[in-house]
Structure formats: structure tokens, C-alpha cells
Length: 426
Image (cartoon, rainbow, N blue to C red; front, side):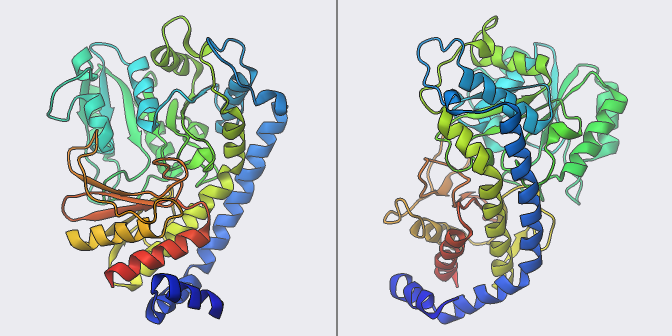
């Protein structure tokens, strides 16, 4: 680090020499991990570029349709690009999805019917799906359960792995199971994200027993972290958000669903109406951002992963428990840090907010966020509201007070934001 950079950090943020030394030690420790990420990034960048070229993308695809949006070539061709990248039959990429949970919900409601059972094999899914499934314990406002869809879940083993013995028993005995939910990312849990090889193992295991079951992956936070996507190892259906990895920090909204055509079509009928599906829907002038964000996504995702690895090593050296550890193989952009202390958790999040380019002058506070059972604190000074591919940190206010750090459009921003956050707690 240049001396003038150190002076700037101290003058503007009061970052002390001991914190800077901590980061310089961590930077040396993670060198090998960062080099491997560059190799993955290079492969995925070529993969995306080839998909653009095969679909003959030009500026004519940066459309601005209105009304019904019939014949929007930008929208329809972007679907084809996503399908190529995911090596699958079909895709649905739309600005009408308000978040990743919305895309996931369309996939679930589109493919489950009264009397069917959905089985979650990674324990309870991410908090915002509780109301979707109907397991929140509050008012039922149109959940899957309200529509007659049953729900079961299998807890992960103590090692954070899928319990294959229980999985075999459940899907063998219960013939009503129609769809199996696999959550790739850690969510608000204390486990490592599922690697693509593990997702393949789960999918193969299910298909060998009951090939008709739909396998679905919540792919949020996981795109472009590996050289393969879940649908490339046999998964039937996957969904995610464009304001996470795959939007490249440029997409202003939206979500996607990829997979087998029949299942994607069913999801499209849920997003719009039966009989119309993906054939309708204007795109509000966002197609250029969608294409450009996708093109940038392999690079931006790896900037975020590099930042997560740095965070892991710095906080390990500072004496905190982290997951994944800095030298673990990664399958999402999330870094979990266990503080075991409410005040330190909040101070860390406030430090991330202070180190943001947007709204750095405000202090985030825990609040009753829609879709969550606990109060949540969210630090997110982002160009796109709530974009977790940008540097952000959030946490449910519950023991053992774990913060979930993710994102970063540039590695340098993650580093400086972390310095401010770490200075708040040590």
C-alpha cells in the first residue's frame, strides 16, 4: 500500500497503523486464492462472450418496447443468451421480477399443484420464502400451503451436508413429492454454500430414485463463482436475481429462471397469465443494462469473491469465527462472520455503511423488514437499491449475531469498506 494511501485512510477515516498492518498481512496470505479466481473469471468471461456472439447481439437488441411488448427481440434474445450460458433449454429474464424471491416464487407456484409436496433438502430455506411456503407462523396470505401444496424439509447433517439416508426414505415413501428445493447459498445459516459437485451429487441421487421429480436450485449469490451452473449438471430449474451476481452491478432490477422448457413455461404463466407467459411484457428501456450487466458479471462477481476472501482472513486474524474460512473453496459471494455480540454486529454493519459511495452519511439501524421474522440490519450504500452484488452487509438480530457480508463492484472498495468496519470493532 502506498504511503499516500495510508495517509488518506488515516486523515479521512482514522484508520490506524495496526489495522492497515492487519490487512497487509491478510493480503499476502490470500494471494494464491486470488490467482485461482482469475482463472475461473477468464473462463466465464469467454463463455458469456461466446453466447453473445452465437446469438448475434447488436444494438438493435437494446430495445425499448411498450404496452404488450409483443415481438421484443431484445427480451426474447436475452432469454436465449441466458439459456446458452446455463446450457439448458429455456430461460425467462424479466424486469418484472421484483427480487430473487419473486423469481423463485414464480418457479414454485408455476410447477406445483394442490396435493403436491415440496421438499427442502437443505433445511429451512431463506427467510423470505417462509411466507411463500406458509411456514412463517403468521397470517397466511396466499402461500403454497394456502393453495393446498404440502411442505417437508430435511435438516442438514452436523457437517452441513445433505442427509442422503433421510432423503432416500422421504422420497421413496412419499409419492406426492413433486419438487425438491436445493438452496445453494448459505442464506442466513451457518454453513458453506453447496459446491456444484455437491449439487450434482444431490441431483443424480434424486433422479436415480425418482426421475420425474423436479429438482430446483435457488441460485442466488452463486452465478459465475464456478465454471459450471446448476443446470449444467442436470438440475431441472434454477432461479436468481439480477441485482446479485448475474446483473453485474448494472442491471437496475429483475430476475431470471432457467431450465427445462416445460418448467420455465409454467413459471412464465405464473409471472403473467396462462396462455401468454413470456410472449408478453414490455421492457421499459432496460435491455442495454441487462446485456451489459451480464457481460460484466464474471468480472464483477470475482471482485466480490476476492473481497469475501480478504474479509475472511482479516477477521480470522482479528479473532472472529468465519465461514467459509479464507482458504476454503467458494460457491457463493457471501462471507459469514460470527460476532456473538449484538453491539459488535451492529457496529460492523455501520462501518460498512460508512465506507459506501452512496448514503455514507447515514447510520443503518435494525428494523422490522417485510418478509423477515426478526429485525434485520442492512448496510447497503448502493447505486441500485438493495443490490447485494455491491458491497453490503446484513444480519438478522438474533443469536449468535452473525453478519453476512457480500458484494463489491471493485476489490479496492471492499478493502477500504472493510477497514472502516474493522476499525469500528477492534
